[in-house]
Length: 444
Image 1: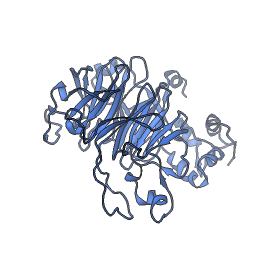
Image 2: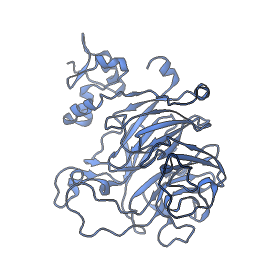
Image 3: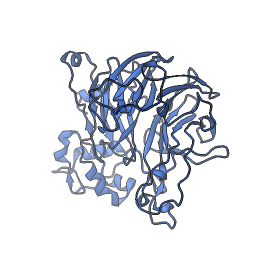
Image 4: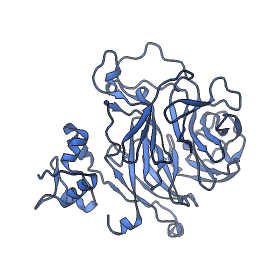
């Protein structure tokens, strides 16, 4: 096997495509010539040894036996709609993103991913609370080996380099239990939602003698370096501001407002982003939110009159607000004042945790597409934003690059690249590079 040094990722791809004289380029005993028909791009061995170490080579390249060029899967629909719907974009997984973390850090369950104005990717994860004892041996007493939980909030650049990270309690606040969604406003401040619920103990090893008390259900605003600026909710909040299991937060910087997907209260609640004062709320169909139990979801039943689990609020450039109702398998669309506009049922046969876990918009000026993280079915759905019809999807259940386990977060940068986060036992983030139409036409 030829050992060729690669000066860049593009060089590595070139080596993989050209191959060794008279035969396909092989790594770890895998011949790539037979795979080139699929358009695979594999880095050279020396470059990979430098980045992740010798012991990981065999496992990583075995993992790359997944089709990395993700063409869209057209979903069933009317012939008329398929003719009129815009052509779905295509994406290619970047199996080397992000770069390896330092200090033997590992990610726990990822609960939020967002992209800021500088195309930096922010990740919120649950850390030690979601790791098994065999994943956090360095912090056990006594230590039992590798590894150490990564900080709960991490900032990456588009190339996957870790730019900053922080977590922990401050002088005037306790870091919340069970963090959920994350957002970054136009000033670069970081907002997170947290349910305050206790995370289950995972894996083997010693259990705490006494579990900590439940934390506050709240939304916190931090500076970009982790200094707390504002708190919404908590045990001392008034009735309108009292949150119950908030799962996500979005910021409308132009209007100076914060939207909270307050799942336990079956509502969307809007607050002033400077003072934290409550401004308005609404439930499903723009009606007054009501508590109480709902009948179990059934695909054959009429949609519930209340949100089953309001778990995201995404604000489009045209001012429309898109709400995820995960366990109701639906998206509802509103004006900012809570006026109901329309609804889309998304894969209504999906049971369990439901199909609509998070929403992001495509980066084109019209935001033609919605990208929906479907953690139950383990893929990313592509919807026509105008009709809310599902026109394509990519991904499937699995552990290899380009596959998903409980994909619960999705975000898009200014170049149209998609970033995903996997919660529960998924515990990773992935990048999917947007393939321009011109590149596809040339066969790249």
